[in-house]
Amino acid sequence: MLNENKNNFFLAIDGGGTKTTVWIADESGNVLGRATTGPMSLAATTEALAMEHFMTAISEAVEHLDVAGFSQVVVGLAGVDTDEEIADAYRIFSTALHERFSFLNFKVVNDIVIALASGSTSPNTICLISGTGSNCYGRNEQGETAKTGGMDYLLSDQGSGFEIGQQVLRAAVKSFDGRSKKTMIEELVCQHFFIESISQLKDKVYHPLLNKTQIGQLSQICFAAKEQHDAIANEIIAASIEELVEMVVTVMKRLHLTKKLTDVVLIGGIATDPVVHIQLEARLLTHFSQIKLIVPAHPPVYGALQLALQK
Image 1 (cartoon, rainbow, N blue to C red):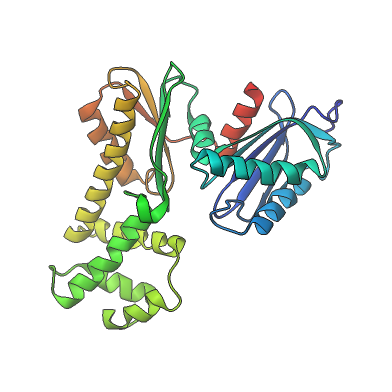
Image 2 (cartoon, rainbow, N blue to C red):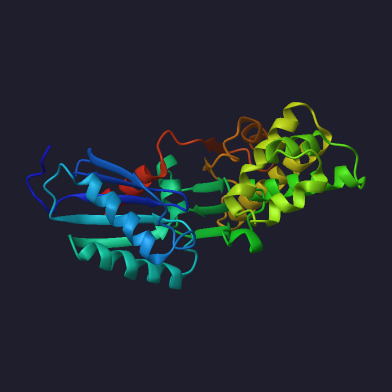
């Protein structure tokens, strides 16, 4: 399908720490081209590789289209939390795109902004991300915004898969050396790393050092133990849910939404886990009776496209 105007296309991008997703649409929002490549987040890969993944995805998406340029470009990028980081990302990716395509407008936002747009069009909306990392962002009908977290694993990421995974490792060690009651997490960690005893765990964790994603994946051990009614696993997940609740409550208060109808969009494997979802909803409803939790039917790149089409 060809667009009569070679420049009247809309480019939507979800640039994550694991993969990059690109959609190209016409002015009616019909998606004409799609592609997925490697990470584009400058916090997760080098500038050179990020640009390569960015341009490769666009090239694949336009392969069967007659595209000379774009009316609007919206990039939702993981790891851009300050004005300086957004400005750097704008410079890097707009320059790379301009070498091949023309464009009228090019906007870079934190990926939580497109995630919010993928789940709700309400003027009063909060987006809670909890996957490997965690972040919370909201807007109100006055156009004000607020956020909590989003400063990566050393400074934030409370309630995330990373934090749960880290607690899994520590719970296994405490169970092994007798500082806590026994937990089946100890046995599950041994199975995960193919070791006979936690005494062998140090080498698996430090040589080479586990990265954030690998530690985040260990959160599944905690959920598996919780299904078996393990007390320590229950405690870890309950504490993580309280951290997520606190993030949402803080944003609600800062945006004066405590007595207003508000959508809460949930993104990420932890936030959308059925157990967490149910408990999150129950806890949040004790604070606010007028919230609605939403798990989006569309991926975050859909939100980037909606923002592009609004321009």
